[in-house]
Image (tube, rainbow, N blue to C red):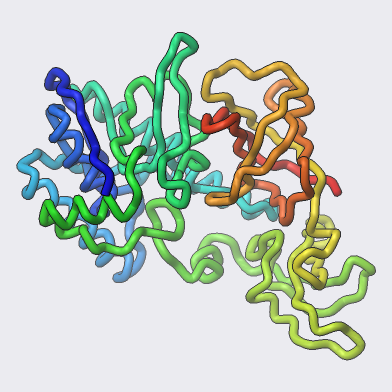
Length: 370
């Protein structure tokens, strides 16, 4: 494990978002070692709707309490469920209703962790907030910069690209220089109950679900035809909201007479006809795109570059950075051309732009072209 050196600083209060996971636990530990006055805050952001939800949330709170007691810090509790529903989940449902595939983690970070949480922490007298995200923040004469974490496999700048200067000025990411294995080693050494806890997955603050069943609680089934690009009907879908571009599993399409054995993938949605379009083959040309158009464009530095601008992008978390050119910007929209064709470019997801190790910002994908 690498040696982490710390510079002693005046005792300023940092409110750490203690989720009950190992990452936020170690973030609090490191800040204490650096000389900050640390307090924890456990956020409840979803009203449980079944026993499984209740047990998971209760265990997270218990784990957060155990870490706080081990560190000797105060643990606050707050309920942001109303804010989560209004600012995140309602958008989530509207996007699925429109047959798009949103990324709730991105909006959750913007609206809950780095807005509602930040405002609440400042009201309680904290100067900074901190989380267990894997990212770095630096500052120079041009302002604050969001940068890639040392652990490329855990880097979370994709989910943080909607942050701006006012948020980064108040945010600390203590894990930015650490590998995940180092974090678990520190947690074990500290005797944290979260040391071996499995990483959380699934919908932000809602957790792991049988996704189609969960979505069906809020969006009723709306069956329609499944067709090939040529218009041949090959099955029936349960509702366009339940499928995403590039999806292979759960399509209900088996072997067909006169067809190759290659697997089927979702290539498009015709909302007007309520029709799902499938193609065969992982690299089918209809799954590949040469560029995209984005909306809701956001820049971390608040000032966009002059176009054309060569940079790189990610279309999904953990994707290797892909070379691209930002060809034009108008209002809050943009066009991006890819150096190499990209697969399964999905409306509603985020296209996040980078230059070197710096996350510049990003946009919501509106459409792709081949």
